[in-house]
Amino acid sequence: MLDESLLDAPEALARADTRGLLRGAAESGARVRTAARYAAEAGIADLQPDGRPRAVLVAGPGSVAECAADLLGALTGGSVPVTLIRPTGVAPAAGALRWALPGWAGPLDLLAVTSPDGSEPGLAVLLDQAYRRGCTVVALTPSGTPLVEAVERARGLHLPTTPAALREPDPGTGYGQPPTDVDPYGADPTPPGTPHAERPASPGADQPEEPERPAPGEGGTNPPPLAPGEAHPRPEPPAVGAFGAHPHGAGEPPAAQRTNPYPAHPSPGALWAVLTPLLALVDRIGLVHAPPETLQRVADRLDQVAERCGPAQATYRNPAKSLAAELADALPLVWTEGEVAAAVGRRFARLLGAVAGRPALTAELPDALRVHGALLTSPFAGGADPDDFFRDRVEEREALRARVVLLRDRQASDASDAPDAPAVTADLSAAPAARELALSHDTPISELEPTAEQAVERAAELLAITDFAAVYLALAGAGGS
Image 1: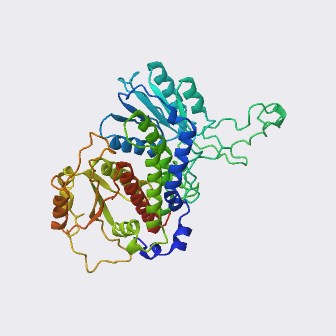
Image 2: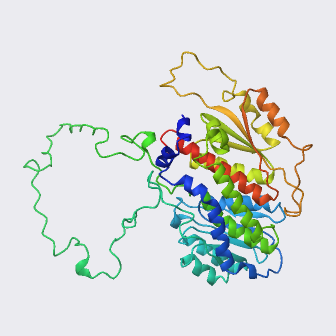
């Protein structure tokens, strides 16, 4: 259930936002300006590239690297392949992730690695591997981290980012890193170099001798010996929760009280701490038209959307709040038209799951009409089954109903966009067919279409609105943030 009254109560939204999600979304424009300034101070304007790379490889932990690679591929218009190197490992932890270059990577390719704190040893190994193969390497990480030393060994470029910009604490739900004073693998917590006298005492000659154990049946806890043929008594099972709440078994807390043991999704605005220097870099290479003036306009556009979608704006004139209210108790079917809209749609679906805890499906038009067409005739369809008059509206939640969210990016055929990017004209658009299919099955539809001229600004507008919508769903949903 979505508490729609909370959407028009800015003070209540601020109290519910224990993770600072609204602030993180509103700070996107400031993050763009900060990242652009850091890139300029690193001397990116003085780069003299020899030419375009054959391919751009992106690697890093978390969803920020994935979204940055997806958006970068959309903005380049396919002129150069942009490949995400996905990590492998037993857990999404810094020390457990590993990356490996594709077999075809070599001296003609560019590798960009991102890290929130520069502590991932797997990325340092990847940089060494790229150096041996002759790849050009770039690291986007805070200064003074181990990853900076690795990129210097690989004779690459370091583009500094704001410390902890990509991974923020989550005091509200317990997400985040484990305590630093506890070693989950049971190692000695005493810092190296501590004198022996200050170390915790261990069993040995200086410890008192263990008292003698009593004989069986003479006190203590040992049971008396059994007579020949006597059956051993069956112990009573322990009560549920007698030994604390098991993480996956009996005695676990209700689902609403559980916490994710893995790091939370970073703040929505953290994407721009990586995407901005990447755009400045590919502008110098000639892949995307994103000079400093364009990045400034992107920051201004993000500020305008933050003002229009902020918590002080009423729902009826706030596109993000309106979209959040429309997606309450709905299964979003995110249909996209255009490369930029497709990348934004995939990020929106990820945000709905990671931040708001809501499932969502995404597909690109016109293929979405075939892929999701069966859902419009299933029990998820808006007009599938009428509401049961006798349903207990307090104890029984309303079933999810599909709602189409149409994200469109009609690319302008100007020189500012990638030259190879096809323009989506009215004659070639699949949006009319999408509307007809959805409405013919009584499925409601929401539409978002940016108005900016350049592709980077259109992406920023769509990203900002969908980011705010996911945050409002998280805050006004059951349990808040």
